[in-house]
Each structure stands twice: as structure tokens, then as C-alpha cells.
Image (cartoon, rainbow, N blue to C red; front, top):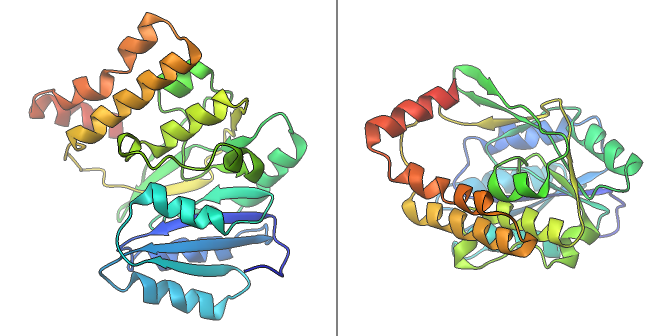
Length: 269
């Protein structure tokens, strides 16, 4: 994996995404910034995801690297495994069913090169499905500590982080209480370590989503979200209102299904 100078390592945990992975990897090959390598870790897929990824490794060995978990370990541990192979200046994220728009890396690298006071840069996301795009996110350019702890103001998948910053805090937490909220936990620990994020206003990433989805997030992950956010309140000594806002994931999970469906679809629009 070493020997070819690159500036960006893309961490990609892949799991049962054989049908979408080619589009995701092709979007990396279309980047206007070429000094990147993508470290993929197959997290015990039961379909042909590994074989699809291997084809890209064989065809583009300069850009793609592949490792494998023999059993499913979850995203947190999988991303840490990818991170252990990263030896570049910057770390980027990417999921195996999404699309990075062509200028993403060029603009994110340029921002971090020119603004040493920030360790994290991200962008809003465009949500899409088989019918096309259906929602465009709006950026809060400079998220405050309160916003990082209480709200979802930094998109994880499109982010780029200084490698020294993420490695200085030990990467992603593998505690059970951070499952499915590894990004919130990561931002809290990075901010506690002195890092700051800037969100570019231009959406540079497309996330595959279902505009008609009405299934609820598992309640245990809502509890994880609340616990992680309360931990952040304690770290930064935030006020009572922030503590109360931390319970919103649990409150939403307790809503009657018709109310949840209504709010979910309204948010999608």
C-alpha cells in the first residue's frame, strides 16, 4: 500500500453492496483531484461485494486497496481497520452506495490546505433514489459546540479530516453505546481535542436514500444517540436546554406510528 505518494486516504467500509459499489467507486475515479487512494474493508459480506471490489483493485491498483473482516464487526471497527492502513495527510469518508461529485476532493483539499485552523471539512448532501434527486441539504458553515452535540450539523460520509487529528483521538469509538452514532461521538471528541469543522455551502456528495421509507430507527440506537449527546453535554458543560434536546431521538422513537410517518415524510420534502 505504500510507495506511491497520495494525499488523501478514503475510508470505506463495504457490506452487501455489490449492486451499488461500482457507481460509488466510479465516482471516485471521476474526481478532478487524483492524489487519493481508497482503502476498502469488506465487513463479512454475504453477497459478491468482495469480488466486485477486487475487480477495481486489480484494474486500478494505484487507487484501490482491499482488506477483509472474516466476520461482521460493524462500521466503527471496520473504519478503524481502514484507518490503521492510512498514511496520508488527509482522511476522507465514503459509503459504498453513494456518489462523490467530481469536484469534492479538489474543493475539500483546497479548503484544508488554505485554512489550517480547521481540521474537518464537510458538505451538504443531495438525497437520491432510483427516481432521481429529491432533497438537498443546507449547510451551517461553522457549527458551534452546542450544534455539534445537540443537532446533526456535520455530514459524516462527505467529510475530510486531517489524519493527525483523527489519529490523535484514537479514531472511532468501538463502544456499544456509539453504534450507529459513531459520527456524533467522533465530532464531540474532535471538538473536545481542539478541532473545528467548516461546512462548505455547495453539496458535493449524493447519498442513496428511500424517499418513501417509514421504518423507524431501532430504539436501542436512539438510546445510543441520547447517551452520546449527553456525554457531550457533560464534556462541554452545556446548559439544561442542551441536555433536554439530547432526548429528542428517544421522544421521536416513542411517537405513534402515524405521527412518525407524517413527520418523516414532511422532512423528506
